[in-house]
Length: 289
Image 1 (cartoon, rainbow, N blue to C red):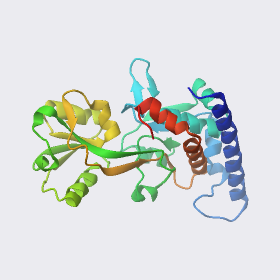
Image 2: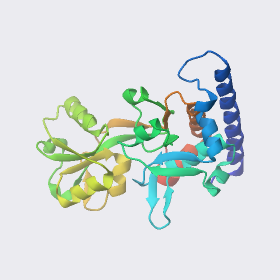
Image 3: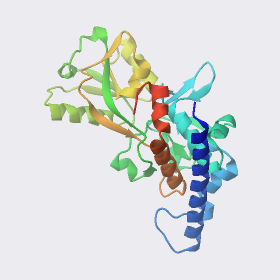
Image 4: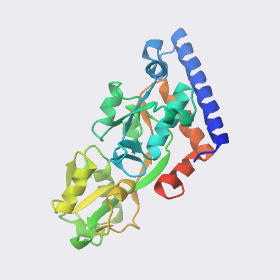
């Protein structure tokens, strides 16, 4: 697990970040700055979280290694769950270990359709759920620096007879509602000159897509490769995995202009620089950054 020096560093860093963010919020209250980053005390996310004593986090419950609800322990686990505790530690001025021990995060399972609205209506403080950073989304929400990069894959049953991308002509590919996967596939087909016109069918969650694939209702399951790893087994395979496309940069989303956004950004940056994220990736995903 994490060594003492790293915990001490993160605790001090977290306290410094909160202090700086608090000073920034106060100066915003007293001045006439109307920029998107300024908030009044009544609108302060940091103050609301500290008053509540917990960080409300939107996470995945079905992506192994990132956000997964362990049915045996009924606890969320994964890289993104640990990352939420680091944010909570920074905001609440405690150590990472204390944030985990005292369960200072309240987790809510989100889907591509619910994550944005739950930030907007203040039900969630952050969304840390394999949330891909795009220019369009950055217009509506603040995003941290990317903490992990992935790419899209297309998974099929080995018995399907689908061996290459061109074989998807006329086939049905299952994707998640609100995801960027469909556009990524079509862009890749165009760039690679692949003459195939598949049909896309949207589903509300990943287990539904996987069930549809296994029952033969669709021909393929397309999503970030990290997600597909959760559902991979001896009967399934990726089609032409050497073709990497649809790069996905995952970031933590917060309400646009929130005073929480700077704390999240500084925490993620510190964890990347200090090596903590590399260790988490190795621990949960069995891979180096």
